[in-house]
Length: 39
Image (cartoon, rainbow, N blue to C red):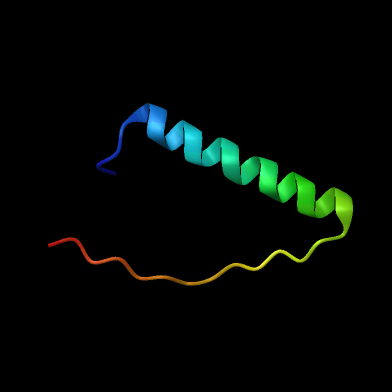
């Protein structure tokens, strides 16, 4: 993937906390489609 394990773990942990917060507190979860090009 081109990123370190610690960076991936930090991103995953942050996303997990945000999703848990949204589900427990009735917040909206918005998933946006983004395209990233690697040159």
